[in-house]
Image (cartoon, rainbow, N blue to C red):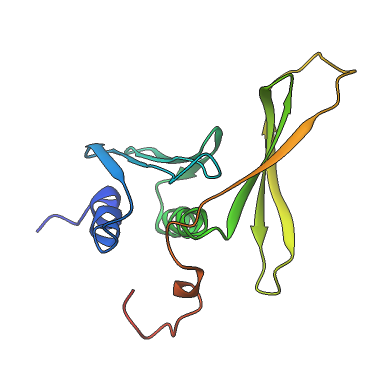
Length: 149
């Protein structure tokens, strides 16, 4: 019997939440749409060599190992629940830098990584906005580990 793909596993979980809009483009690509302009779309791409998880423009590459796949799925849940948010920097309306922030149980935010584009507009003040999803309730992360999500 063939092992269920990562995409199919995620789709099976998402189907429990009919208000979450997503598109399984094929067996190796899944896009989950944010509710409004205060959130970010999520794209999950799988391949034999590596997997990629996108939060808007911010993205990571994961090796196709059990440990890294579990880490990627944890990040995906963080993005769906709002435990993770993007701090987006822009100048003259053009986004150029994104910092992923993770919220701890005590509600403090910490930076988890930054990626950006070259921006030679040094003298212009940066505008900052926070992008955060609330597609799943945060309490699913803190539920008893014995119960099935």
